[in-house]
Length: 159
Image (tube, rainbow, N blue to C red; front, top):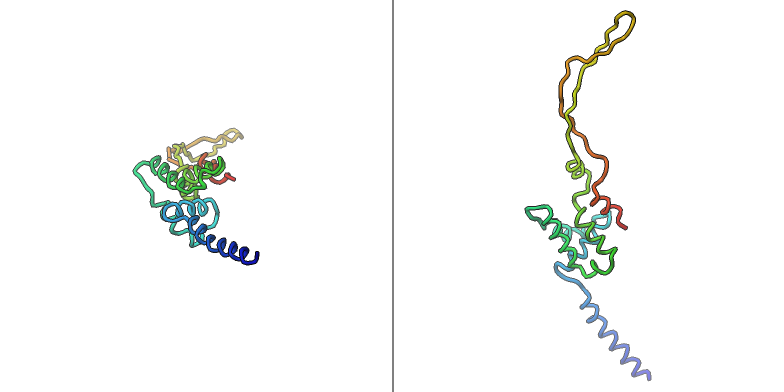
């Protein structure tokens, strides 16, 4: 009995590394899974550098093609399609990562408006004050929309 139990344990221990070795991801599949982990967290440890670099190296002429290619890269991770929540996270990352930081949002959400700017003068006549505009100019002013785009809301609020 002890001999057969020892053989069983030895067989299981001998098979464990082989089974574990089959579960290790490599290549773009590994980088895709790492990118999902790194882009969905607030931290960017040094272990994320290669996967983040690979993700952001995917570029095409049109933004829509870039987003589609990045989404397809993230979908290489086997766990990306395990649930609806995971698929939603992958879509949120593909649409929002790199486009929802303050600098990019200020650039994308900026708009201009022409406004009439005048120097106001006060005039007193017969004991009453009259305000009138003088030296009016039309100037171009820039503003930033305060609301985040939908893809950024999905990226930050996904959870």
